[in-house]
Image (cartoon, rainbow, N blue to C red; front, side):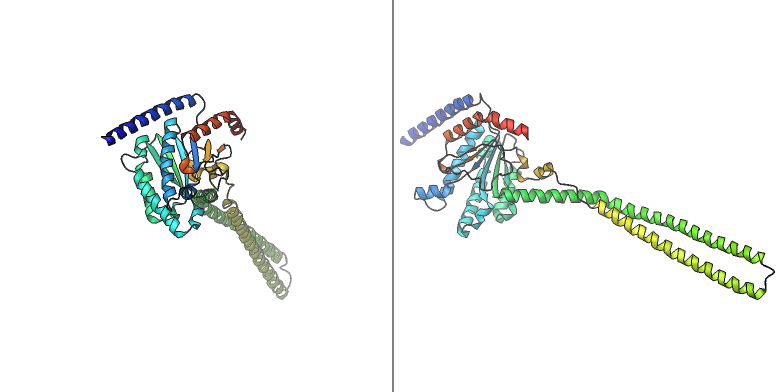
Length: 366
């Protein structure tokens, strides 16, 4: 009996709370609403220490706070929510703590895929953002499974940053941009290089033809002159003419050979210089543009955040979304992450609305 009364009271308070939230969100929706909110979930371990809880209990409490905050965001009309779940720097913690977090992550990923979970309730598509190869094999497989299972959901999006830092994201984007650009140029120029060598060979053949013609003409002209000379001097002595004949023939032959060697050497040099110059031009990479880098960012699947919330009063970004938060207000409540509630979100949205015009003007100036 007492249990039934307790359940009824819980349902009544839950229904009343849902109604009050709808009224509150209706008032907030009069002004501009954020499309994307990012969270740095700071303070889980301090929360556990503050309440004398066992190791790892603070992160479990933080997960419950996350589910609650996601419900508030999606009810408000926020489509994108990003959470900083695990940094690459967190791998430097004690191995026991890292393994405990991996186990908790695996457990919660599987929980998200259950039929009655928040994912199905709000039609959430899940992305795991970061260098997933750094995760343990079971967690990585579970993350890939969750992304595949929710790929058709379109209502809302949850981006979970694991094994992530902005430095790693920017480095990855630059490397991918260079790789793609290089592959495109190689595919485009392989045929050009081949054609260029063929054309160069044909050009040299043509040069050779001209040279051969000129050398042969020179030799023929020289021989004709010799014949004319030889005919005009019939009256000279035979012995003297034979000696002259031998000298002139040797001179003409030597001259022809020298000219041929010079021409062949010159033609080879032209071919080599032409091919080298062609290769230099074809393999120079064009500059990488800003759009090329942004296209290969891990976070390219979502727009830039409108609000960044970091709990525990810290104002550091801790290597999180450095590229994407240039024009994003930072809200830093003193509450630890497991203590975050509805009013913290409402206050963050009110601050966003108050500075909305300023940030929109800044975006247009870029």
